[in-house]
Length: 506
Ligand code: BES
Ligand code: MN
Ligand code: ZN
Image 1 (spheres, rainbow, N blue to C red):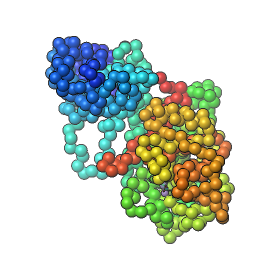
Image 2 (spheres, rainbow, N blue to C red):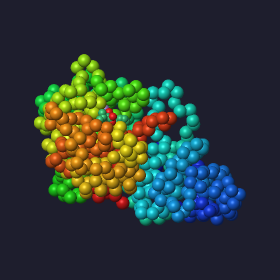
Image 3 (cartoon, rainbow, N blue to C red):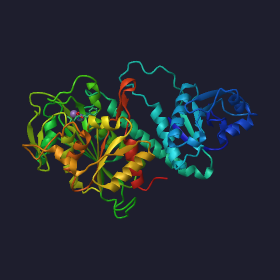
């Protein structure tokens, strides 16, 4: 989709479709009012007849509205004006794009971006509009022999702003929104790919391609490299698989040495770690068959950190960002890890593997130890780590754990602003006892109670040397049922956090 920004009156706008909002109680938005005036109350007449009451979620297409230069006017219900906030704005944009896409219009102009939203800036409105539009038009059809048959002529979206003076600011916000949308789309594509295509090797190739496209440093550690480093916890997960495991390392260097551009001492890298289990069968502790196909999504953490990196590279943010992706399959087999096996992690701490299905923490812990060598500013890991997190928070909030309150607050705030929310969970010492083992320094499971907390506690034992946060995206990374598919979360949260760190948020 092609995007642009424009200022000017809606009735004088030459377009296949002009999109304006209507609040409940027949209250027209400013743009709707301008069209109404030019068209001699055509809109208010339609509204008085009851065809459009302004209810949230409703839309109405009008053709050949008098004294306008557009072919169609699309009215979008915004709900009660008093209750119009960020969430309502985003729904309105989504409804508008979906309705627009169902018409024969080749281009459209959204005047909804002119509607003020409490506590949100113009730049925010433009960024969200671009992200949501791209998200709504996303399709994953590469394995369908017949593509979606619906005719989709929509090729161009224009976002309207009230004041010409804001043009530069809005253009920058649009570029940011499109960069974030491309990161979200990458994360969704990787997540949606089947496990027989998206293998650890495929993720490594994707990383190399990204490095080539965006001039990043890329290194892929192979099994022998990991053996030399003593990553026996990570390697233990791959033992049952025919696919060789990889540890992907990508460096983006946008901070200019010595200038301290962005915030604070930006020469230390921010590190993102993503769980990259390309299929989680559970291993010898085999999962039940129902919905096991969804365990192809067990690399969505990896997909999201690659997506965030792509967005950052496209925006050329003045930060240093390192992305680490431990990737493997978790399969049963004659050589696979068995319950009761004990491995020594790269940190030297020993782990009793009581359940081979708690494999995410086993690949993450060695990667977190490996992160120490980059002297990070902060480390954030993203993982589809526990079914227990889905029980705790459902599919609404990502679980957030942190050993640093400042970092936790920054991430919660970013999630709130980016409409990609997280909720903080406790990481108190009291929970550490759950991981006691009779035979090793710790067990890899802590029992059924507080399952997502004990998983985070396990990781916390490998993050003593830096500020660290853990995002458990088991409930938010994909949807099940009729709409089965990767969501691209939490790319928006991560990129919002990074934009803020870079001082590039308007
Ligand atoms: N990838 C799963 C977590 C998961 C399960 C995410 C279902 C989304 C839906 C993870 O590797 C896993 O299997 N965790 C176990 C841990 C348990 C054995 C302590 C779980 O949650 O059941
Ligand atoms: Mn598992
Ligand atoms: Zn898993």
